[in-house]
Image (tube, rainbow, N blue to C red; front, side, top):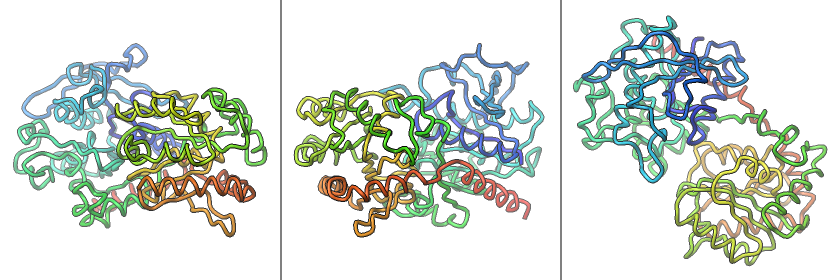
Length: 489
């Protein structure tokens, strides 16, 4: 099959979250299965034109009431033969930031910017003489492509092209004032039928859900959760209506990067058979973070965005968060790497000064994130909701037992500890409260001190888990085939 990925971000060119990793990794995995996969995305300011190949000639795009002339550049994903096409329009994309700048929710002209991307995807295909069997759009910023396919393009060159729309995080929907609707290039007769209307505003994600041939999201449990009011962000009714077209496919992990047997960012590589070498990484982590070097004290690691979704209020809230109590009452060490909400960054700094067994690095450091995964004994993710989650899978592969809330991809990947048999791969809590987090961390620490043989058994079982992209890519191929069969009737 010929598959075009339409996305606002893809590693290594632009990244704000897991979407970028997923698009690139899935594209590579599909290409390995023999599919012709290509990616189209904006060329942002930080993507250097000098490192790209220019496709000769300008490309005219017609969103809304105007004609816009763009350039097109090309590259490939590193280590793969997957072409990446960049839509070059300085007024729209020649700025810092993908959706907005730090401190601002988003750019006011995002409807125009990402409508341009949707229209340009079709013009690009015509320009290079390549019509895909599947247009796979990722999240709200790419949602206009399947909408245009259904209402504008399906009776021409793209009559045999089907669409798939992936919801990576339903909390981000692209909601804007109704007066910006004309920039989509669709007539007002499609305002309701395409699904844009949302309390007299426009909602790009809603329209993508309504208009795409097939829908996917990034874990089986999340596919069920978003059909319920508490997780659906007002889209649960539409998703229940389209439940027969909705598939939950767990994201994979790039095991070339996240693999303790060949990870060059950690002091000692190890496997399940040489797991004793994990102790070298634990000592290195304790030294780097200024903690007491003691192999007998368990380390709880955290690498996270400091956002409400991740349960940071319940964990670090200065009035009632559980971290201070955990570190004061349970014999352990805690290491945090993260950035995000200002109050939480300040609280991490304060806790680092108050507690001798708590250390935080505010910001992001790739090598430290690998060291935390390799050197910690437990990894804490008390997420309010988690579409897929990657860190719990990294942790399992590194023999670092996750402590997670039972939601989304966390529920799909972590098996709760059975203290009678020692089975399981982590420790699972149901209620997101400071007390529940405290109790579950305490449960893990109790197993560490009293059931060490269970900990070692769980570590080896965790490291035997398979989280590569091959199986996920095969499932996506099945969805593509179903989408094509659906439009052919």
